[in-house]
Length: 310
Ligand code: NDP
Image (cartoon, rainbow, N blue to C red; front, side, top):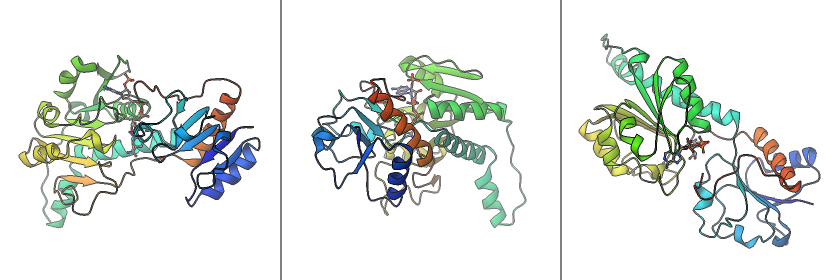
């Protein structure tokens, strides 16, 4: 019998327990604070587990990340890399992320903050409005989330480019990849969207060098992870006018500390890591499916490559 350990303490714990019991009575579900004999645990459903804890479960067949990102798992130096890791890929999560990206691209493109400020001053004054097809949105990462956002932005008429690790083709999107493709990708990205996973290769990628390679007055939207950005380099680029503004949803330290300069920076719009989230109704079906797959000796869906860490 599969034994799944699950986080406890959230307001929805009872819903998860009841739904597991109803949908998959063959799975024994345990909570993290009452793990019982850890050698019996075969599956772990986790978000930011305490470092070292997964290594104390010798019978694990699968580790499932509750979210799309898996950097929280690789932060644990003892994470058992021989155990397959799966992540959530959820249409609802993807749709919400696309809403967020499109919202802030359009907000910048249509000068919304400027007109809101002018309204407060009763100022009737218009700006030149470029057409969408005269504006390039560059997306770092054309994975599950980046591709969907790219497709919707193409549908709105924007010129969209993408940058990936390996070559990727996508209709209507000019694609670049690898180190050689980075500079040509950056040089046209008037609105840069970060949808990369956080890995040793992508940490601190948004630094002074990257920001200097963007068109003058570019706009930056970070929905990847906080440690992608060198904070002081971002602030310097905003202060010098090289960047015209930034939207930040993710931060090195979350919650963002009260005194952080990001809070009050006039060119920064920030949100508390809400760009998207997993929908438990979809997630639970994927978890059950993946538990059953591993029990049948099959590969889980949405498996993470432990070498690449995404
Ligand atoms: P995927 O794994 O599906 O896609 C990752 C993309 O990044 C791929 O296109 C991949 O390239 C590219 N990539 C990875 N490493 C590199 C590299 N070194 N150089 C260039 N490109 C690289 O991820 P998702 O789209 O599902 O999610 C992306 C991230 O979004 C998550 O890891 C998470 O951090 C973040 N996220 C944020 C949320 C929020 O609320 N703010 C919510 C959910 C996720 P290739 O195609 O060649 O493999």
